[in-house]
Image 1: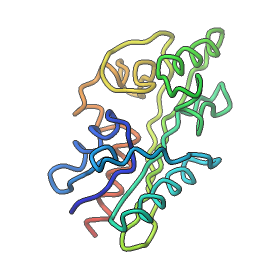
Image 2: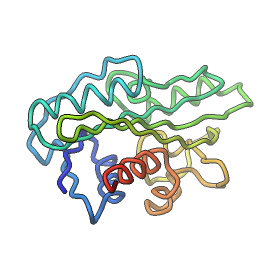
Image 3: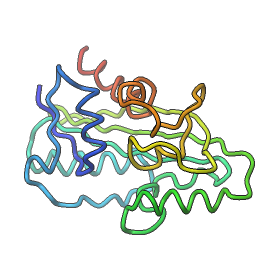
Image 4: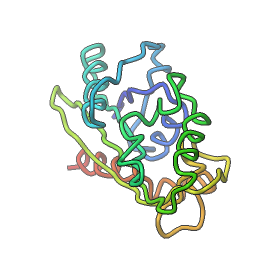
Length: 190
């Protein structure tokens, strides 16, 4: 089955392709030569995921899904949350985002956080939502070169490494996105 994934993010697309292969063929927006930026102006991750999936469904009338992910830090009252991609500025620059988080937590000892992903699937015109959470802590400095986004500063519970220090296959067993995709796959299999 072919599924359109409403993203332009190459790191996210590669991660999802690996999670859904070989049973599902995932096509990103860039592969469709679709470069339109879909506004994410909802106040929740679920709302943003639905907005993006609906826009792609209306355009192509093909099975599609979208996600929105937020890093939620307890000491920052859930921030950056829905604003995670643009936390350091409109540029969606991961380095600026991490720098802002690390600066805001510089004097904070309690660094518990979680990544939360919401996926919206539209299949035959019907909308479905799936969720995944990875709990962990925010490191005091960046570590690792793999992954994307906040991966170099997020250490998942039960591990001594950040997501950016893990192989894709190890990260894809425990990540927030992997858990949400697992729920999506289970739904598609039923």
